[in-house]
Image (cartoon, rainbow, N blue to C red):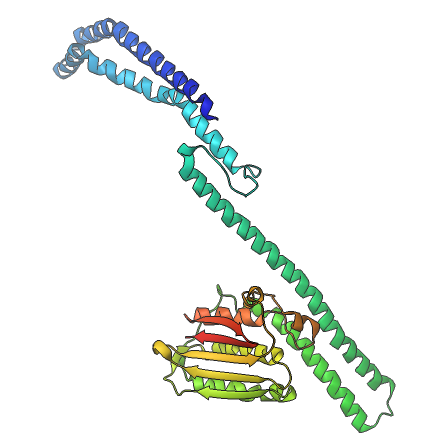
Length: 360
């Protein structure tokens, strides 16, 4: 309803108030003698002193009884009187909630007297738009992941079938050739297994389902062990790994899940460090909190891509174009696990050096 209709609205309401007030006054005036005669008649026919006193009281003070009756009549009529006001506001709210009510900037505009409601509607609308955008982004990344995984699984699967066909169709192969083809098929099958396992990681390490079995954990020992287990991967890519680990007091953590998170970050460094590059793992405790920093050499990363590192299903271009890239879940899983421990993980890139910092 526009501002130009406000005088007409006030006039309509005032007219209804005048009609109601006049009607109540007329009703009270006409009702007095009728009520008095009715109560006097009951008083004369009543033999009980208590009831006689009650009817005598109302007969002498009949204005109280009439006022109560008029009040009972006025209460429901008040809704009729102020209905134009209520209708105006409900119409404005209904208009503001319509999908096409927002302007080009996505905001709803209401009259000044409804400014607080306009603010709430715009805040809710902004949250809904962000949620829809995030849902579309997640769905798009999932669709892309299906395409990437289909390609990544099909390639090693084709190789496995090819090696098995060679072994089955050529019984005269030498022992060395059989061992070579069998090992190649096994390596390709292991690649398929890892890809399939990554598909289940989101559910297994979902924040809502994550339960921690905390025990004292020596981070220095854990990082040493993880680096040693990953050494073959680094050696194949001729990557140098340096450890700078302080001997800190144990932290309370779920050893298996924390190891999984750190291993994900370590493997991410292995995948994105170019051959001949360097990875450094550092452990210290500034401000009485354990801090793990893992740095690796590589290409410069734009800030907009760096900000998406911990999104589920996000993979860099290098991972999409090689067989080493995972499903884009590793860092998202690591973030969930670390935050479930009350910690935080961040990433930064400067001069081709990418550093992940974990605080526990």
